[in-house]
Length: 215
Image (cartoon, rainbow, N blue to C red; front, side, top):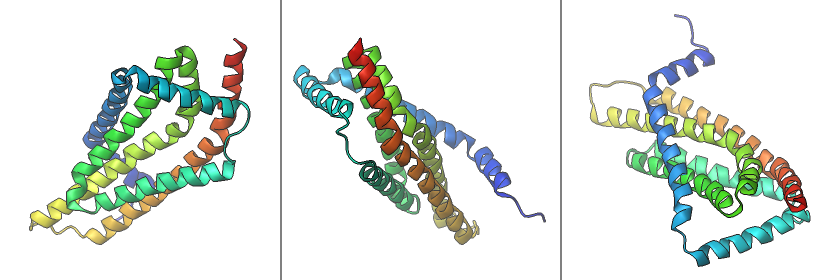
């Protein structure tokens, strides 16, 4: 029997988990929408406080007073690694399945709230700022989050079947090895996203803020 290549395995994985990928994507989208709508529920005083800190942050960015790129990269990457590690642990535990979905929804809420608040307070300028500050790294991280959430849920379901369906004799060790390797690959993608967030996004934000100030 011919050994399956990684492309064949990836295609097989997507085909077997297509409905799960769809569910995870819809759940994340619901979180984004909920986060954007959540902005409207804030009290005026809360909006003013957030807007004050936002203005001060943008002022620092326009003056080039943001943190060192290396430090920003370390903080961002460490944050991503904590999320990835926690999701990896939840995937190998049976009771972690509902928490995986909660984490995914919360991730969507954070993205939706950030973009929604910027647009609500600054209109089209806020949309432009969100485009350069939120979108670049999330073009990498959102697909990565969808993939690792699906893999974690799939592995957790296999664990449940292995635990409670005694006639299932599927070896777990090869599955666990592939599961861990997939998360390591996602960790590399997170490093790329952190690099974009630390070195690319601040420069783009500075240029956009300068353009906005000239209007």
